[in-house]
Length: 130
Image 1 (cartoon, rainbow, N blue to C red):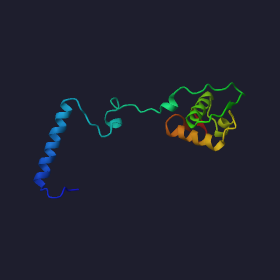
Image 2 (image 1 turned 180 degrees about the horizontal axis):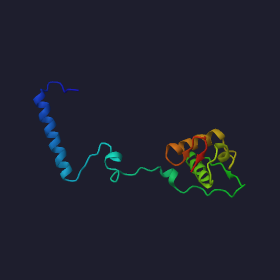
Image 3 (image 1 turned 60 degrees about the vertical axis):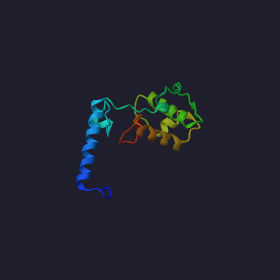
Image 4 (image 1 turned 180 degrees about the vertical axis):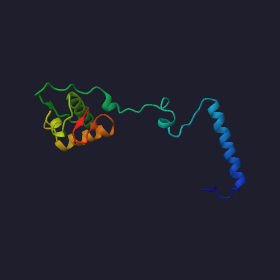
């Protein structure tokens, strides 16, 4: 959109001035990436989900059910820990069965959330893997 009241020449002068200012910043070491994850992946800060990357509760022994945590962050950690304890892909029902009184819908939702965060994989078969 054209700023009101500026001629083509004035717009060009402003553009040249902005370009010179940006070049001076870059010479001084300040680079303003538009998409750092694409333009400079090594320089881009890595954003992590700390609540999900912190070591969660240890998986229960085989055949022993874990208590279902009350807080959502703890639930996500517990679901992630149980998912990673399986050596093969599992269904949401299998993950739910590892807990005492875990809501099936909540476990399925947390598994999908872990997939969207890159903490788990959903296979075409509908099974999940850590």
